[in-house]
Length: 282
Image 1 (cartoon, rainbow, N blue to C red):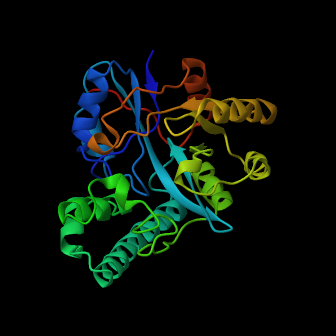
Image 2: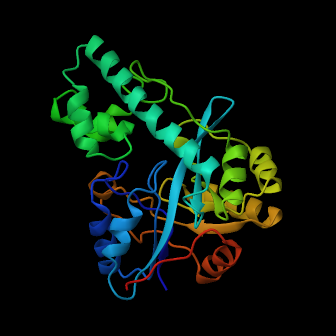
């Protein structure tokens, strides 16, 4: 049984529409796939309408968080999207993403980069705006050779000259809101040091006490030694261990299914959820 619990579409910073993500997941041999766009549930309806027979959709979102200056993400699964508090926070996160993207474009222009905010919005195609959209605009303008080259200290990396902070939730509040909406919270790629600073084991332990259900251990950005350490930590804390591709379409090389979650873990996650149910083809 192939289970991938982390994928993005054009509703945030992926390159494929939700319907295409579903068809690609099916073609990759997956049985279960979660659509977890950044700070939005906008792609769920389109994805559900396009579900091929035999594929189960897990509605979710990847919630932007920060703690003591460290950026981190919490995956929320099967929560009630109509939960007022959670919906309000997701709306605030999306709104500030737009402000931040425009501010980064202004900084890039000040550095001589020929990038425009209208083009960034076009690339976002009505979805939740993120740095990858700015990076793609930079590639188009010839500022950098590829998306990865934009995420450096020279440009829009976390210590970059054109980097701008965005509003982000305290992860403890994110876990509380997801749980309060009947969902299940999992810490996304907690050991991805290539992305920047990460939090320590003490923070993961505290989040577990606060209701965190699991950690995303098997992730493309985690080397073997990080996976081993996280697996051990999860075992000691009683956390579920998930595996996911974190696919973004062309940006990440269409890697749906490259990392997966064990069926027993999926069943345990499903048993904890009360806010929504997985979706299948009608």
